[in-house]
Length: 365
Image 1 (cartoon, rainbow, N blue to C red):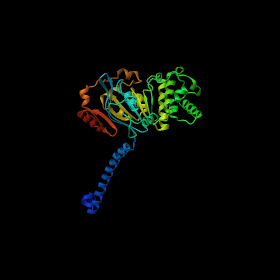
Image 2: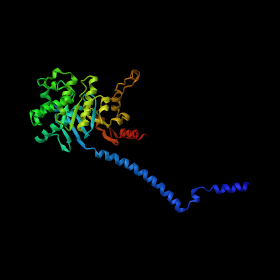
Image 3: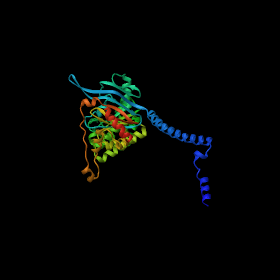
Image 4: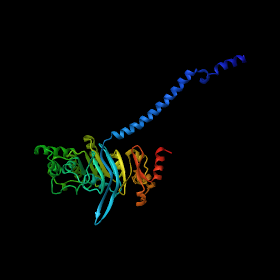
């Protein structure tokens, strides 16, 4: 019986494919294994290609290349924006965040040609718009790019009624056939921003801060622009009104496929409305990423300090929270840094050693 068992074991044992399979069968299995590996490699290459294709498919509306902006004081020039490189894609809301005096508003004013540039190039749809340009191009840009100002009181003419304020752009560029059409456009827009037609005959001092900001938004949107520069449009408003203004801007963006440069100093507000966020410090972009990625993996220490400054609604957590501050490392350090793409769509500024550390964090090492 034992011999029979051993014989049966000998028959069952040689189940190893190396022993039993013929050479042509072994080659078949090996080729199938290689095919699986090739398929996996192809999938990875497709993912990389798709991410690159997504970036290429995004049409750049505004491109700023090595832009330097400064203000003269006597014979001296104080540079506030140095070597700025920034692309804003068509149809996106790009949030620009930084502390007061970092140069956020200056960038917006440079795009709309209120502030001149010292050097560099600003392209709009591939056409240079900074420096000396033709009168026709300058006139065209005024209809293509509009601005919502920070102070709703100072940005409105107190001597003019709402009808005149909203229709001023229509009159300047003759964007209506007759007076009836102009009045209809103004009425439709004032209703669209949440006010009533009878408000057209009133003056700015008769409105609250939130209503004035709605008038400013109506004045910009009625021109049907391709791009809106929103310069801290909610900083002077109550918390209850802020969400309404943000939702209004987002609705117009979706309806008209507008591009919005949203300038603010509160990261929590910018995350709510923006597709991508750029963090600026002392006139230099220190980090650019999508809203989710920036909150998920902030790399630059200044970005981290801004995130810790966001208040938490839980009083117990807020009381024990550690707030980090970033004071900078001086002009010598800043001159040695550069903006590098550490992962697709995620840019961060740093020295060579810092960039290596950022790359390790991104890869999870």
